[in-house]
Image (cartoon, rainbow, N blue to C red; front, side, top):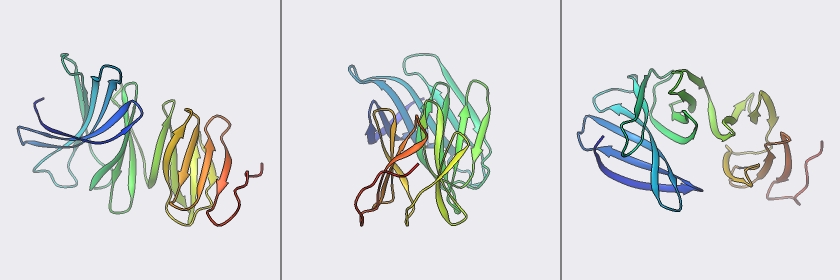
Length: 206
């Protein structure tokens, strides 16, 4: 794969998200998830999502991974559940890439395992974060925002659409809607802190 332009978008710890375009012009690569060694800045693997330039929103898109400098490259085509407008957050674990596909109704989360070829789709997802390969999801159900983890649902007391902010200490996951903040303990599966912006911070009750 010949790369024409790589533009860094943001860095998260030891990983960086990129936009990229191919020189051939036959495909447009929407996003890349690049894993690398921080100390040497040597790219280890590159995950990517691409679509044919001439394809409409209902066509297959492609998810793949390649290792720069090595003859290792995997790719699979995916038929979207809903027409895809763009792609959002991307995270990887072992041989799988997890990402948000933005649609007119919101977003769907895809988990693509390139070893097994299994594709799992979660519809109507606002945001997600991978914890040891398991996704923590934010969704809206019955007019209330909820956090879903390990098949459990916890309500979020937020007025606006929430999103994940940071993961602290590989354990504490911050959720915010721009005003309120809730901290979720991914080990105990409980909220440990809640702040609404208009009241004194308190620890949620059991």
